[in-house]
Length: 155
Image (cartoon, rainbow, N blue to C red):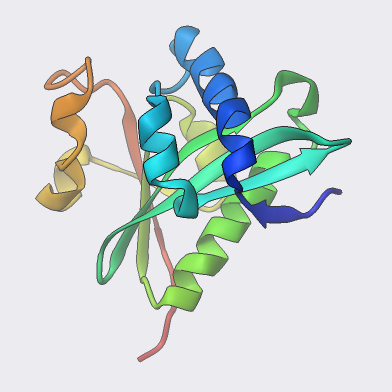
């Protein structure tokens, strides 16, 4: 398996293309290029043979809350544990930061359940998670599924 690494500026165009490939198929939400650049420090990637084959972001929302988003794995690299590697890296970083709760909004709930997340009603998520939703073309009729993961970060 290839290692999970922090994204670099040189990965952004490939990340944008990969994320929006799946967004065009209504499998995830699109991300503008500017948003990926602005949040580059949130992203992890996996590269294979000089090509970025997968990405995911951990976005800190509050002192005890972060979101995993923009999880995308190239079709020819799926079902090989690559997505799970990215989720594990995001959860490890959340734990290192002392963040106890990680959530996601997704069209692929079975994948996140396989990674240990639990389904929750979107209404159970704090209001602060909706900060960027007003920019979404699907707002206010969000059709994504919410899942949550609790970490033992100690005190």
